[in-house]
Amino acid sequence: MSGTARGLGVSPGRAAGRAYRMARPPALPPPAPVADAAAEIAAAGEALRSVAEHLERHAAKAADPEARAILEAQSMIAADPMLLESVEEGVAAGLGAAHAIDAGCARHREALLEAGGYFADRAGDLDDIRDRAVAAVLGLSMPGVPDPGHPYVLIADDLAPADTAGLDTATVLALVTLRGGPTSHTAILARALGLPAVVACHGAAAVEDGTWVAVDGDTGELVIGVAEDEAARVQHEAAEARERAAASTGPGATADGHPVPLLLNIGSAKDLRPGAEGVGLFRTEFLYLDRAGAPTFEEQVEAYTAVLRALPGRRVVVRTLDAGSDKPLPFLGLPEEENPALGLRGLRTARSHPEVLDTQLRAIAEAHRACEADTWVMAPMVSTVTEAAAFAARARAHGLPKAGVMIEVPAAALHADRLLREVDFLSIGTNDLGQYTFATDRQHGDLADLLDPWQPALLHLVHLCGEAGRAAGKPVGVCGEAAADPLLAPVLVGLGMTSLSMSAPSVPAVRAALSTRTLASCAEQAHLALTAPGPTAAREAVTTSTR
Image 1 (cartoon, rainbow, N blue to C red):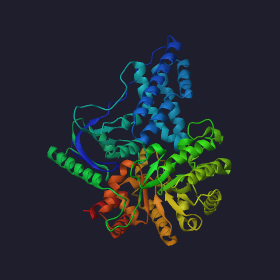
Image 2: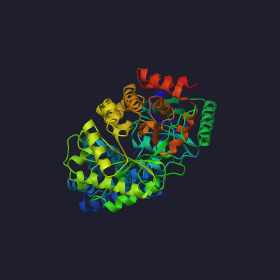
Image 3: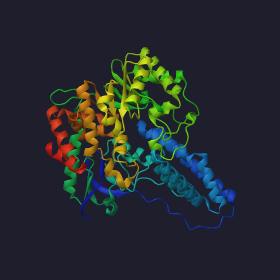
Image 4: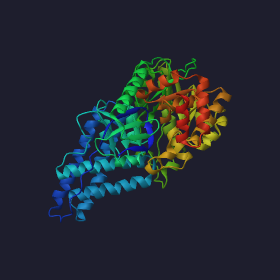
């Protein structure tokens, strides 16, 4: 077959080669009477344990910190006693081990999807756990990526973290999935690996193994049935683009010398890279997750000091605890909520547990005093001027020199000018801002287009914040996934962003893109994107202007 299919480009770059599909998950055998329930429970338990251990081994070998964190979380789900309990209930109801695993995973998946937010982010992991555990029970090889013996484009319904994290980038040229969205595991890990990727591309379902295809991770286009010489040309141009990006060094700046610091998103000191200009997002919640109790003051000081000490004189933006009902922390004892995405999240948890925030601010201040970094602190999920002012006062009372807030809800973006009367800076989280702007669950694959960071309405909110920053003479940056897009990064600068923060592998390509555009051309491209009727037209208009 030939033609063009469209999805959502989530990891930039182009690639071409023969396409091969991920193997289908194992089929369940016909139901059969259970002769020995204890043996079935033992077999199911052993299968889940083997999956947990398999994922844990993958996590230990994962070089990328985000891949490691995702795999560790998936391993914990496979080892969850509540999942095993559901499987045991299935056996007690007359199901064999394989069918009980299938039913137990389905039940937990549905519960996670209903919970929304962070829980929904984990729901897709259960599909992979189910497939692997069923294969283990049936004595089959665990599902994995194909190995045709030459470089290829991988097509799948969706990719599990274990599959994506273990990809050989010398063999896999690009990723195309039928499901997923801009914040799915596939998108996050593809960007970390530097692989072009397109998700929510339903037309890929008809591509047969061995078909020559071309993938554009910027536009979301999948061209099916390209000529072999055309594929070679695409690969050659992609290699040249990578070489140009790798050759780009030094601080981020436009072609006419306008500085745009390119900062890192990190979870701990292990995520830092040599030559980093600084940190735009230090996710401190990784220190809190999967614990029965809060980390001690001393533990926090040690973790924060490790990052601040590594970056003397450079900016480090520390985000206070971004947790709550959608990122469960047992020690907080928060009640269950029908809609966690709209509940006690981020700074809102301080309403019931102010001591947790105060201890964290005190620990950050202690680390700041012991180091020479330019320490900034910001609060997540701020909605009102009152919240912003209270947080800033609290941070300054602890001796922290710069206090800011994240812009993740439209209310905050609409009052960005008022917020900047109270705080020193703003940082835009495009993932959540998109979710709340379009009332769209980040895991709803059928609505992935609404979460496209090129949506003009989302860019308009970014522009409001940029204009407010210019008027106040205060910095406004982006620390969401949008900052990692080399085509979109200049647009964000044109919208008034003074810094961009992203995962380390994304920095070279963004630096190279900015170095080819003047500040005036960034503003022109921002205007094109803002005035476009939709995300596809915005992307195409900017792409055309760069040729």
